[in-house]
Image (spheres, helix red, strand yellow):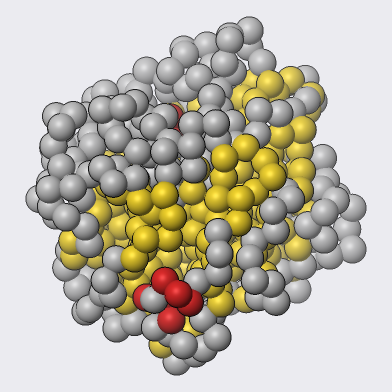
Length: 439
């Protein structure tokens, strides 16, 4: 089955686990494991966890889209070990769904998506942000909530969640493609009620084409009191970030005046190589949020930290395109940096130089994408990348990883979910690799 999907906005997530006092990453990964889906795909921001790592309460929480049957739907599945997964359950509504994301905090899981933009929808139908929330670790769901106008046009929304003191908040950020505003809403009661939408900024970016409207690829993450939203501001790739420290007030983000001013990063993202920002956080590292992206020549990131008033404008280089083993990488995209115990983990889709004009052209049958990983103990010096999953005939393109990294028997355990697919889209599915090692 062929699907129309925004691989142009594909966000390949990064997984890299930084190991304390170790020059070379000591995490060893096993063979890939299937996640229960069929004609399935998702984007970064699709894997999280609830419960306590190492305890019986621990559950990985995963969301994906499948168009094995029409309408295309968002499904949720969970696992205690990343190997055995629950039967995937539909969480979306009656309309075709696309662009799923997932976040979790405490016992709460939120899944978000948009309607009106799939292979099966006409170009001019409304695109609406919808969410579904579970407050019991993904066992039962409250039902579909519609957070944007039924007649509007949204651009790929992303959800987030965090515990703020004794309260668990859920958040959603998106671009209104008609007004070109970056919008935000929050709930502090399990999605029973939502704050009124506020505008965090604007964009003029139209990289999906004028008919689609503004497309700024807003992305969000939250941890305890910290929230950051990043977006592309124009067609040159200017990247802006707006953040807030709630200071213990769970409702503070509902009021625009409480937010810090907008920071414009020093780097422009690569529009041709799908350099959309990915914002990440971990409850195990409660004082930092990362904002990762790629330029034309490198994978980079910056941070928003609890002691600061805004994101750092100057980015740090993880890797500059070059040669790894026998392969030369002339591009990369969907960079993600996960805060982890003892450092940081980064991962991205490395685009091999195979002699095509744009090595990151996922529509070319010659393209080959390897899933690359790097680690850092201090966030400044990064180890040489290694290939986590190589392109092969059965999985020509590997991208969109999402990461959970937790302590494990004095070391770490890393769960890395990613997409594998063919440029012809006659095959596409979601997979997981599990790594263990020491700090």
